[in-house]
Length: 90
Image (cartoon, rainbow, N blue to C red; front, side, top):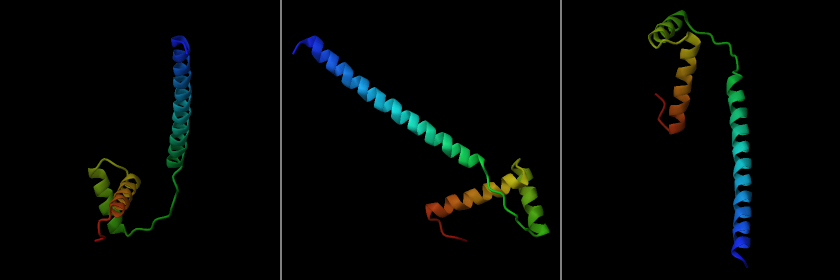
């Protein structure tokens, strides 16, 4: 087999691998896009809190430069993260 033919075959194999990589990259980007869309579409809930708890959370949110809603979401996210790590409940 000639050197030119060997190079052409290698080039073709590399081209095929590159196409597979591009396809995988596009699939990953699509999945990331779908995940971002899911994360953007937040669920709404009704939450009833005592006035004293509301005030505590409001002060804490102010200290952390967050809205009250943002503070509650942050706290819930942290609790879920700790639960996943296997830390015991208090």
